Image (cartoon, rainbow, N blue to C red):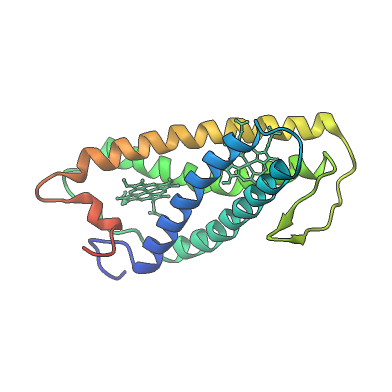
Length: 177
Ligand code: HEM
Ligand code: HEM
């Protein structure tokens, strides 16, 4: 489907917007948890939740797009085990991009704070249950570590092929190539 050498512009846009949001969410997440209680902490948590919910919406769109489109063919320099690893990493990325916002949302649902999306409060249906909220916080932290592991593997894979003279692998995801 389309150019067999590169992703479409939509796929590239979704890839880079999601990647930028994810890096922002990590930096914001680590920064905000150490802030003292007060308005600054509240504002940063609210921004983290809104950007995290945006990742969920974009990932649903992206997954829908992906299910209807085949990815471009991999260059011949990519061996069978590397292709299998890349497929597994991509699938786990998609899974975690959906579950990570959900664990964050559920932790806030059961600690009484709830979630608002850029100022619009979402209905708070969870009862106050701090151990359950802590459980989801733990899953959220584990999810963020798993995402970091995937990102490291993804970058190692992409960069090890990026400078191959024939493939110039990165151009599959770069709109100006
Ligand atoms: C920060 C979070 C990132 C996430 C969650 C992410 C996720 C993904 C996913 C899921 C795919 C597969 C797309 C598909 O076939 O459906 C992909 C492909 C790709 N990504 Fe990333 N990516 C990230 C960052 C990066 C960065 C920083 C680079 C560049 C250094 C990069 C370069 C690429 C390239 C070149 C491809 C195409 C590779 C291929 O076809 O196997 N990504 N990425
Ligand atoms: C893909 C999206 C997301 C990523 C990558 C992400 C990442 C992170 C990270 C790295 C932290 C710091 C964890 C630590 O203490 O080491 C954090 C904390 C937190 N996140 Fe997210 N997050 C995402 C989405 C969300 C969403 C959608 C919500 C809520 C609606 C949320 C709510 C929270 C909360 C409440 C904390 C503080 C947990 C605590 O009390 O320690 N996150 N997140």
